[in-house]
Image (tube, rainbow, N blue to C red; front, side):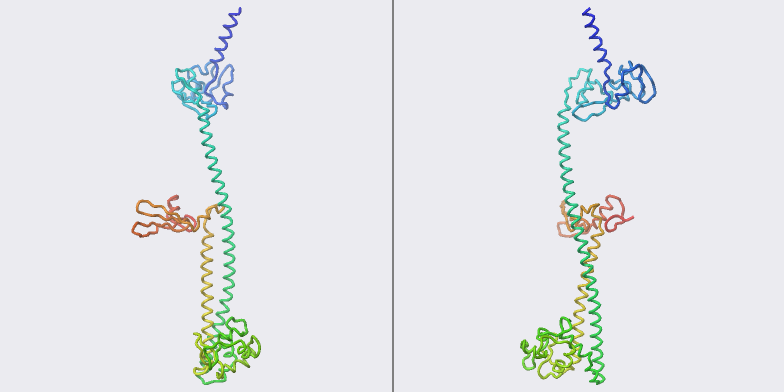
Length: 402
């Protein structure tokens, strides 16, 4: 009796092992539950469950033989616990070559396969961890560049607003200086016409007085100060000496500044007489209002003074507008979704290839220089990138044209 029980146990264990379904993933196990019949996964045929993994291909999709090499279209699933699972063609099952790192494909062959999945998994995990560290470092650097780019963008926007405000202020000054220059030119023309006509009364009109007053009022604040008088007026008998403060105060009627109304009735008469003081010329050498008509000289100096001031303001206005235009062009460039590439602006990179040195300036020019020093422009950065990536030949600032 005991012998029969042992034989039955051995037979049952052999039967259970023979019915073990190999070569399937956990997601397909529901199709291979022990039952009376088996439905091919493609639905093409129903067959007795005993015909699964019987080393004979019954289903067209090979699903009845996942653990044997019977089906030409079959696939064997390597579980590879500890490493990456994957499929192999069923023709490689029990062919004497270890294809699965867990040796599950050679369960009934002469090959002596070792389970290497853990070692392979360790190397794989170490590689992935290294990749993740690299990715984390890249993301950290990108975030840093984004923060710097946002700050730079805001700084450039603030700089643009400041320049635009300066341009508006200069525009107002420019219009004022143009008005003053036109007035000075008109006064000079009137004085010249009056001299030609011999009309001395017209020469002494307030317009001429105003032009001389403006000549002395160098900062154009509407009053003549001691410093301005010392800079523009000299003594007749001692042309090289600068007026003392007391002398200047005396000429200003005892005060430290003089308005146009008071100038018309006091200092104007002293200057036109030319017996004690005189106005210095524009080159700094003392010269009298006498000789050549003093009114004409004063009007001429005032006209030249206004022309010089107007030119300075025009140059400043043009310079600011050029800076605004350049900054606006830079702000129209695509520096990335979060301005992460803004740091590349105004930077250049060099690469030497044989006898040529290439200089690439992102968002600017790309040049090539040979050993003889001859430099050739290869085009604009955006155009080269555009043509390389999209094969388009039309290039616009910041990207490719249509």
